[in-house]
Length: 525
Image (cartoon, rainbow, N blue to C red; front, side, top):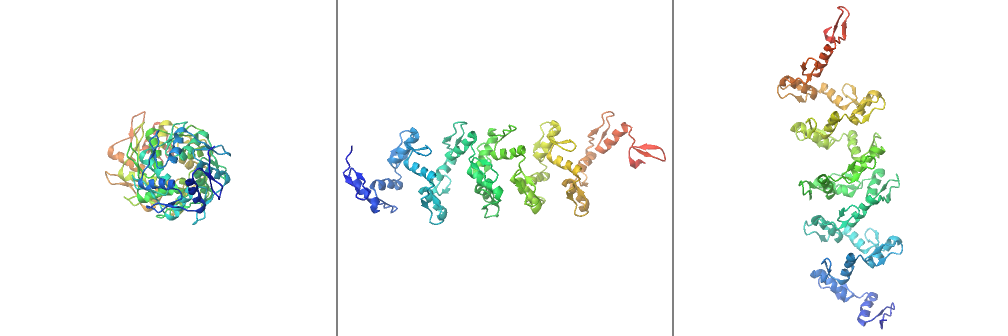
């Protein structure tokens, strides 16, 4: 056994050399005789002082033979080498979790004990790690000492800088053993693995819904509380998540630092770029267990699943109408507020939704981007194309429970149901005439205003309805799209075609009681 003749009188610790005892005694006296001339930081040991000087000189004399990574001290190199050997000699007695370093084990044990010995003097918040306290204190000081050499972005923690640098290098060192997907952060891999295990450890206390991420649970709670603690300083818009606020801020700055390498499209968030790249790859990793439909984004899957469950967690406080998506509720609320934030630069017409403005702009440009692959008919909106495609497929998934009549869209079913209920929610403010559809009210209002927005480019004649304009154009083109199969006679308007069909059927519906003669139209009597 090695002899240790030099003993500390304070704690009884024994040492083989007198110099080691002298260094040790500094712990009890608080003496730090070794001072750095560059930054004036003091140390109790000469070895610690020597290692510290490498920060200023940039010297890293200890190199890993496996990956050639260099370090400023030998102890850090020894810890690093355990990454390659897989050695984890320090084990927690409570949960059997193992660690590379004894200090990591000590920090981990505080999870079980709940100990948080490091307290912030400004806000009195406590932490289990001294490093976590130092990082937190930078919130109060605003200090961001770690700067990216590529884009000059600064960070309050070196670990945050390290993760950020992987955006530029593309490095993703953490790989899922099941599906091979790689991540730039170990925490993201840990969360991802829950997709395979099905683990959802974070449970909502109100509705018992479970989540794989604590941040998702926190954002979900705002549905119940209505809380939106993150407010934009420019436009005062509030959000339930800080990440959503960060993405929103870039609307004002116009910053889009993330570019797709395939199509050069720019994005304000790396997550948006990552989701976009799935379009090129055809990747749809999120699968519905009910109907096997796949999605590129997890949030889209969550919204889709509500079709099967019928869940509508977002309720309007004014009229109690519920929605399956928060965005749908947000748009709906503009009915009550009258807000129309999206304005057309050509005609100054305002809209409650950006998508409606985008579709409206096609009226001015004449652009029809959405083309039917079956008949080549073009549309200004993708929704109109989807509805049109049901003409070819014959699909009518929306069925009336009263009369069993089926419809291609849910909106047509809703309009149809008003015939049974007698509901006419759209009322004219001038003559109080009511309508089942908002479009019918809009057409009616043009009687009062005299507005005729649909103008013939040939003769200048204007019309209230686009359908009337389309029929009128047949006069100039000579087109007669309605042809009778028996006599090959053609007509410019469907009305005249219908009357002609009655003539073939010898349907003379209107009888004169005086002359005892029948007619096709009542105007002929």
